[in-house]
Image: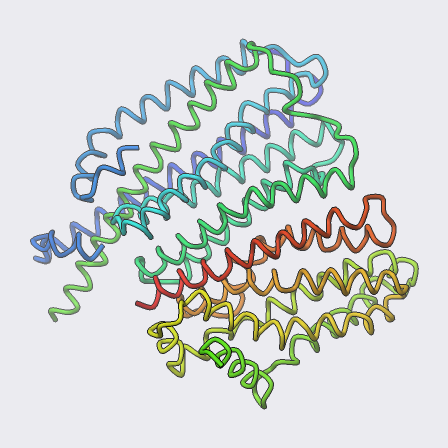
Length: 60
Length: 242
Length: 222
C-alpha cells in the first residue's frame, strides 16, 4: 500500500462510502430477486400458472 | 443496449439468465484492475497529494449519474412513443441506481473538498449541479413510490424524465453563471489541463468498472421488476377469478 | 369569442368567486415575507440586501403552491374530459388555463411587490427591478408548475408531490430573477444580461410547459 499522506482518513472514507453504497445496491438486488422468486413459486404452487403468458405481455 | 431489440420480457429474462454471470465476472475483474491501478500505479498529484485517489471513484460516479439520466430519457421515449413494455421497466430500475451513484459522487466530493478547500461543501458550480441532479432523481423515485399502477406511474415518470433532460443543461448553465457571479476564482479545477496518462488510464479503467457494475445491477434489477410485475398480474388474475 | 377565450374567462371567473382561492397566493406571499424578519431579526440593512431574494423566494413558493388544484377541480367535475375530447388543441387549452391562473395568482404577486418592498427597506429602483423581474419570471413559474399540476392530476396525488417534482426545475428562473434584480441595484453585471436570459427562460417554458402538461394529460387520462 502506498503512503496516503496527511489526508488518509478522507481517502479511506471516500472509498468506504462508495463500497458501502455498492454493496447495499447488490444486496438490494439479490434480496429482491429472492423475494420475487419465492412469490412466483408460491403462486405457481397454488396452481396459478403462467399459462397466461400472452395476456401478461400485452398488459405489461 | 440489447434491450431495444427485445420486445418480449420473457425472452429478456432468458437472455439475462445467460448474460448475468459473465457480466458479474467482468465487473469484478474491471474493479480489480481499476483498484490496482488507482492504488498502486497512479502517482500522487504534486498539489493534492494522495487525495487525488478519491477522483477514481468520484468522477466515474459523476459520469454515470449523468449517463443514467440520459438512459432514462431514452427509455422514456420508448415508453411514450413506442409503448415498449420493457422501456418503463428499464427507466424505473435505473432511477435508484442513478440516485445511489449520484449520492456516491456527492459524498466523495465532500470528502475530497474537506482537505482541498478546507470545508465539506462549497457551492461550487459542479457540486451544485450534481446536487440538483440528485434532487431530481429523488423526485422521480418519489413519483414511482406514490402510485401503485406501474403503467400509469411509468408514463408520468417518463414525462418528468424528459422534462428533466431538457432542463438539466439549462440548470447547469444557470448554476455556472450564478457561480462565476459569486465566486470569481475556483480553487480547484478538475478539468484543467489535460490529465496525464498515468492518471487517465486508471480513471478510464475505473469508469469502465463502474459502467459494467451499472449494467450488471440494472439488468438484474430489470429481471426483478419483470418478475414483480408478473407476480402482480398473477395476483390480479387470481383476485379476478375468485 | 373562441373556445380558448371562453375557457380563459371561465377559469378566471371560477377562481375569483367564492371558494376559488385566487387571492390565497398573494396572502401566502405576504405572510412568508412577514415571517422572514422574525427569523433574521429586524436589521434593515440586512433586509435591504437580501430583500430581492426574499421576495423572489416568496413569489416562487406562492405561485407553485397555488397550482395544486389547477387541473384537479376540472378532473373531478368532468370538464377536463370535455377539454380533452374537444377539437381545440389540448396544448392551447392548457395554455389558456395557465394564463387564467397567472392573471389571478401571478399578477397579484407582482402588484403586491411594491408594498412588500417597503417592509424590506428597498428603495424605488430595487422595488421596480424586483417587480419587473417578477412580472417576466412568474409566467415561467406558472408554466413549469403546469407540468407538475398535470402530473399530480394524472397520479391522483396532490400535496407535496407537486413542489418536490417542480421546484428543481425552477432553479434557473430563480437564479436569473434574483440576479437581474441585484444587478439593477448593486451591479456588477449590467441589468440587461440576466434579464434577457430570464425572458428567454420564460419563452422556453412557454413551449415546454404546455407541451409536457398536455402530453401528461393525454398519456395519463386516456
